[in-house]
Amino acid sequence: MGLGIKEKMARRAAAELRHGDIVNLGIGLPTLVADFIDPEKQVILHSENGFLGMGGTPEKGEEDPNLINAGGFPVTLARGGCYFDSLASFAIIRGGKLDVTILGALQVSGRGDLANWIVPGQRVPGMGGGMDLALKAKKTIVLTTHCAKDGSPKIVKECTLPLTAAGCVKLIITDLAVMEVTPEGLLLLEKDDSVSLEELREKTGAPLILPPQRT
Amino acid sequence: MAVKNVYGKLKSLEEAVAVISDDCRLMYGGFGGVGTSPLLIDAIFNKGVRRLTLIGNDAGFPQVGVGRLVCNGQVSRMITTHIGSNPVAGKMMNEGAMEIEFSPQGTLAERIRAGGAGVGGILLDVGLETVVARGKPTVIFEDREWLIESPLRADVALVYAAKADPFGNLVYDKSARNFNPLVATAADITIVHAEELVELGGLDPEEIVTPGVYVDMIVTGKGGEWTWAWE
Image 1 (cartoon, rainbow over the protein chains, first blue to last red):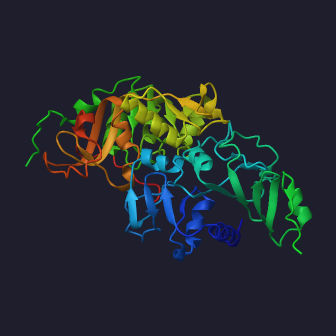
Image 2: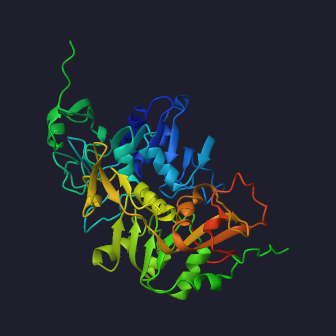
Image 3: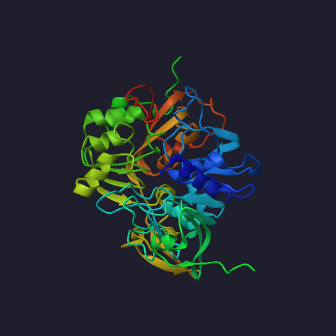
């Protein structure tokens, strides 16, 4: 996947954020979203390893080994930021103070079930803070490639991998489409010009509902 | 001038690691090694104790944090949230050489708090409908389903602080705080490695994060420092 596509996806995800939102970005592609948030929105980034108000990457040579994001890279603290322990960090999440989390996915179902923490017997990273974030953020957005590297759909009828949380995903943003999880199923909000609707349906393991035609 | 050892908690590194033996249940602060004491890990590495149970956020990196102990074959079990940054840990788990109990990060934090605070268990919905709930009791309480999670305690806690006074009142540094204030409360013996030691009264009472009542031993010094992945 080219940098251009990643940037486009990150920009689209950043556009979902509203003024003053408290936001946690997952490791990987979601981390890129930070670079595309309009500063006018005054979005506050939460880092689950213990601070609110995550700033940008420090200049080379200015890194502080004790100021690191959840992915292990040096960051800075924005003005008004603060530090806390892991208990407070997750009380913020579970207590309903986190407006949005943007997470990666191995699989997402049409009902909004998310699997993103383990491929048993192969990749066994662990859930980290993913289960808390996915279930307890007010809005969980998945940002992922539409298909896995082998071409198989990541958006599926039923997740076959162990779940991170059931029914937690509200919006799915991929390189090919933007879909909302609704009680009726996946509502296709946007489709990339690079694919036809038929191609998109082939690459999507769950049925897509089209929005009612505007007249 | 040396800080007065008013409460007898200031110890040598040798005295501190003497309480850690084979089969020890160890809790540690740190997130990707940030907030884990290089000095204490190095001493445990050199002591070569085996069959440790580790309770903490993650498995570090192969040469960073508790990852050093994992790669040295000193750990037989972990209760943790994430081992992805240490490929050796994943390999050992898949081969059955190390038992891993995954706990969601917020759940792990609450379980340690419960262990330290004398709370008999906690009700959480995180992990319901996932493998985390497997084998655990659930309860309907006030019309909602909850998972009952058990408290966690350890024989020894390893804490890394920025500053300590001789009573063990502690202050941390930025994101190196993470699990440190929690594990400090939940072990029979809490060992602190402090970057800086100050006299009693040398800390602003309003800035103290961990009250010294939780701390049994304090060591200072340098050693075992690792190179970060980003360096």
